[in-house]
Image (tube, rainbow, N blue to C red; front, top):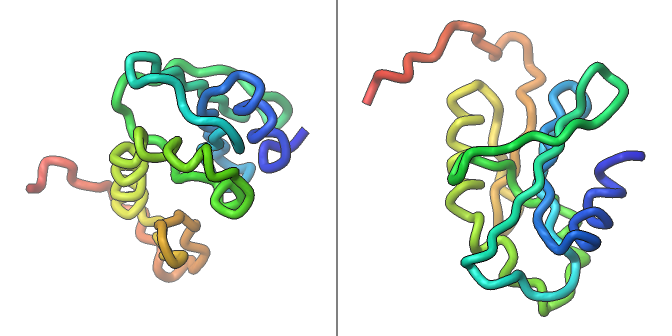
Length: 136
């Protein structure tokens, strides 16, 4: 099972976004259902899975309002029009994730409409010094 293939199926089945945090496995991503509008704002379920021990996924509980990775690029290409509003509810959290990723030394690239995260693969540019979070 790969999340790039199955993330959409899980999101569609449970009618909720699926956040996949996959350190070492590939880029983390948020998967939204491909069809159908989101539930009312008072109902805002979010499922988070992470890849552990190089062999299985585990569910995580995220704090309300925590940053989440950007929408999977495939969603933008293949979702139906009635699902357009899914990312709107989570846009500020995805922006926060991009800002944290920049601070952690990952490159953010723009793909026409939205920002996506890629790892900085140039070892000469990768600075492992600690980040001062107290700076303004």
